[in-house]
Image 1 (cartoon, rainbow, N blue to C red):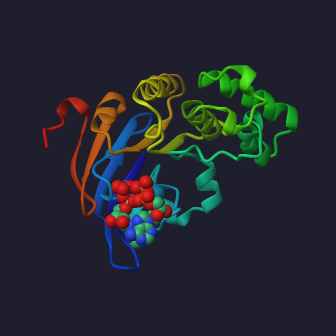
Image 2 (image 1 turned 180 degrees about the horizontal axis):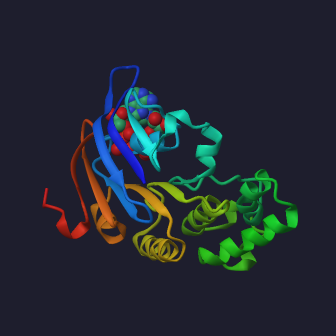
Length: 227
Ligand code: ADP
Ligand code: ADP
């Protein structure tokens, strides 16, 4: 479980991005952070893998303060997916996905086999393996991003508006794919979006943030109060 305990983030310029956030993110669930632009969603997400350090408060992963853990080990246990996939443009799709296994010291063949399995898992045709990112649609690139984040089989996936840049029909397909992956692999997923419909469609738990980084509600979708 990921637990936020009175976590505050104040940027050096004085912006209070997150204000005394306390939250328990259940294991093997999709927890969605939702709210208007600037309400502190990305800041909250990036504190989980220590890309951003809190100003005060603690974040616990399975009962251990993440501040006390080596950052490399922490990040290895967390896949990270961003809006425009962040793919390596000069590498093929299969090599993009195989990058992580290679970094973990797997040999070339095993890494490629793993990458091909992951392509299938996220619904990408094997014929795309040798293509480059620019030869794929936005939705396909996001699938590659998800496959790459899953490559080391981390228990946690952090996703920052992963489907926001694709059209509504493709987005729905990606959401369904994510639900299927979640059901099959049982990952703990923390998902940022500003789209309440998306939050309701995929979230087991929904954290509604308000401007100023305060938690307004934390509930399953069927118990959310109309704002
Ligand atoms: P969201 O993801 O909900 O759009 P962010 O977490 O990106 O919100 O930002 C929360 C607030 O903190 C916003 O007011 C934003 O402008 C501010 N902010 C984000 N990053 C920085 C930074 N590096 N320095 C100063 N202010 C920042
Ligand atoms: P998002 O699309 O997730 O809301 P933003 O476009 O708000 O992200 O921010 C992109 C990057 O700019 C982030 O790394 C964030 O930390 C930084 N940033 C956002 N707001 C500010 C700010 N007011 N001052 C400095 N950096 C900021």
